[in-house]
Image 1 (cartoon, helix red, strand yellow):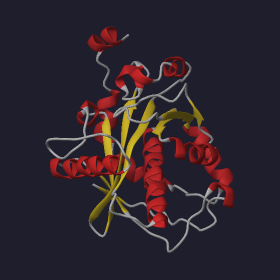
Image 2 (image 1 turned 90 degrees about the horizontal axis):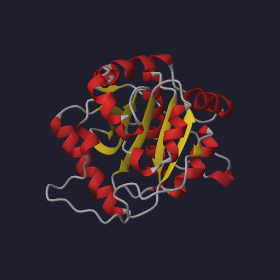
Image 3 (image 1 turned 60 degrees about the vertical axis):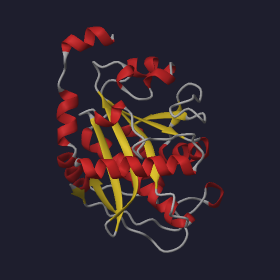
Image 4 (image 1 turned 90 degrees about the vertical axis):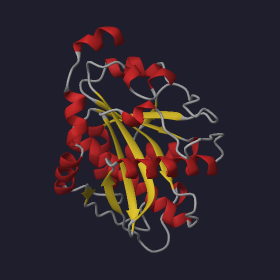
Length: 252
C-alpha cells in the first residue's frame, strides 16, 4: 500500500555545523511492503547496502534478513523513486507486556530493560535503514535518509507509541540528538551483523514532536499522513495488540 508523504526538504534544514541539504529537492513514494516480491527486493537492497558500507555479510539467496523480518508485528517501509526501490527501513513494535527480548536490539543493550520499565506504553524500534548503494549523489542520499526517518516518525505517531528506539551508526548520532532530542541508551554494542559498534538512541514520541515544532525547519507531518499510515500498518498494530499470556510467562 502506498502512503502519500509530501516531504520537501529546505536547504536551511540544518545549521552549517550540523550539515545541510544541497541541490534540488526530491520527492519519493512511500509504500508499506507486504508482498513477498517487494520484501525480497528490500532485503536484497539491504544486503547490497550493508556490503557497500563494509559489513562482512554474505548470503546464498542474495538477501540479508533475520527472524524479526517475518514477525506480524514488524513493518517494512520502502521508498521509491519513479517506481524504483531506493531505500527501506524496518519498524518493530513492542507492547507493555512484552519483554525487551521481543525487540531486535533487546539482547545487545542491557540498559534498555530499565528504560522500558519506566515507559508507560508501547515502544517501536527503527533499524535496518538501507539506501541503494548505486546512488552516489550525496544530496540525494541525505534527502532520502531524512525521508525514511520521517516515515518512521509518521508510523510511530500512527501507532501512538510512547518511545522510539533507533539503532544507528556513530556518524548519525548527532543528527538524532539535534533533530529529535534523542539520547544514547547504554553503551554502543555489536548489533548484528556485528562488524561495527552501533548506538541505540531513545526518546519519547512527545519529545520528538516537540523538538520538531521547535525546529520548524525540518519536516511537518500532517494529520492526513498519520491517518493514512495508520490504515497501512493496521495489520501489524492489530498483531502487536494481541496479548498471548502463555508466552508472557516464558519471556518474563
